[in-house]
Length: 246
Figure 1: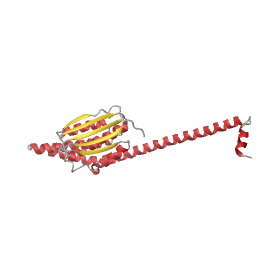
Figure 2: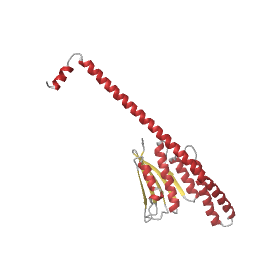
Figure 3: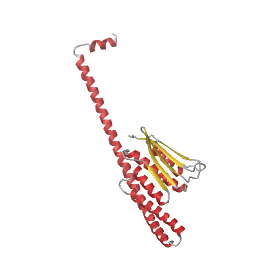
Figure 4: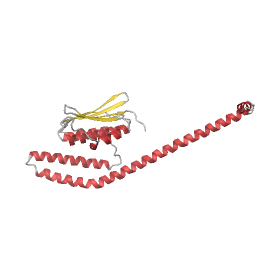
């Protein structure tokens, strides 16, 4: 006998429909239960991962504070003493003043890193960039409204500002800096630009932090590029989606 016809005859019997319906409902219930269990398991694993990452960051922050904080404190004292002793030499006095300010900023950064909330933000890093560059005699123009940005997006863009300013102070004779955030649909573009760049023949290498920035921005589905133009301006541009979900 044809098995298909036999199945049709069985399912067409009066008592078969409730049985089939009950079986279908049972299978659906089991599938739903498995799906919910898997979703809860994934949520628990993500929570455990986040807690582990938080603990690791806190441990690292404490280590950095213990290892670096003492030496920064000593450097600050020595710089303050040298700064006071060179009051008669205006040029040297000014240069030592810049050294002292840089050490103080570094000490402040270490203290911030040892706190519970260590994540950078675009607003905080932009404000620090203005204070730091102004202290070095550079003009800093900022147009980067950070209100309403997702926390992860703001943190990554804040890191871009921090690395960009660190790079310009190391490799440029910066006189003017521009930090600008623009929006095009669901895409955000952050530009950190400065004059006094050494030129296209000395591009920013991965060793200066570009590789790390590319990795972090790529985690949001974005890109980073760095260019040194013939006009003497260096531009670090990061583009990320405004909306981000893991």
